[in-house]
Image 1 (cartoon, helix red, strand yellow):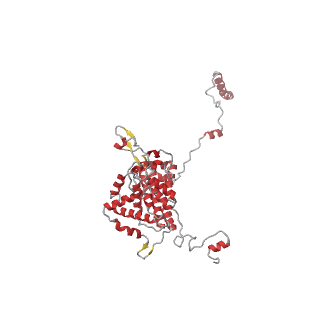
Image 2: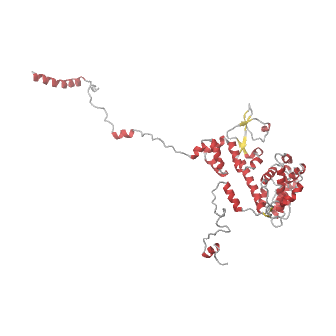
Image 3: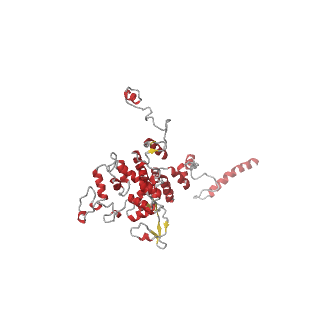
Length: 431
């Protein structure tokens, strides 16, 4: 009996399984039996490929340029050490630098002018040179002025209700103009100093003010400028007269000049001092033909109307420009235009400065050192070039003998030629 019960217990599980299979529907598998997944398991390689790579922590990369441009005050100080060409290149290439400069455009431009044209930027205000100005890049406005309604005005009204006008600010062209004029004046004074005509240190400001007079084509504005003691002080009149006297001495020299003083009147009657610089440099007024061309355009009899219509030129000058530079507005129909030397002399007489007593001092100044009673030597071009390079921030290597290079008078010259040339260069060969 015991064995039969055990056989019955062993058959019960099989019977229950069979019963469940028989009772199950044909279209649906039994739910109480684990027959495995309907699809095979995924490959372990595929599962690894589906996993996204973990994002690595980005390394912090320090950029000196980005750090400087992150603060506008630091960028403003950094621009003090940039040259004009470097500033222009960076302004054209770097978008971030371009945006930051435009956000404070007037501040950057004025600081650039103070660094590269410390004298000229005060003598040539940007308000007098509309072509050198631009609209504010940030579209800042100013109140409406009646002159904005003029047809030739470049101002544009943004809001008709308030009549707000986009203001004009100094552009890079104004900075380049100031730097160019200051460099030209320094070069003119250096050319005169190399020929023995020296000047006191404050003379460049007086020469630049003379250039500012040439920019004004009417006698009224020229007289108003000279009469203003804040624009032209007594010292400026004194130094300007010394400059004119030294020019007469230079052009009346029988060897270096033309032997006449007429060139001073001719060159000071031009539109700018560039022609005077070219004459001192030997780039202009080298022949009688060049002098006649300038003379015809400056002061010559105005042609009759029937002669102006002809296509012929007078010494290369068009008929409509003959004698125009000596007239107001630089037009043939204007009144005679006063030159800067005439204006300065008249103003000195009007103020009662008795400048005629100083003409002998103007002639004798700058030739003898009265402390040691000896002639003043000519400027050393190498030393001046060294000072200019130091001023621009360039690396300059100086020798032990006071900054002179090894190819000077007392140094040993280096030659890559024959033995005879090397001996001659080292002062070993026979005389």
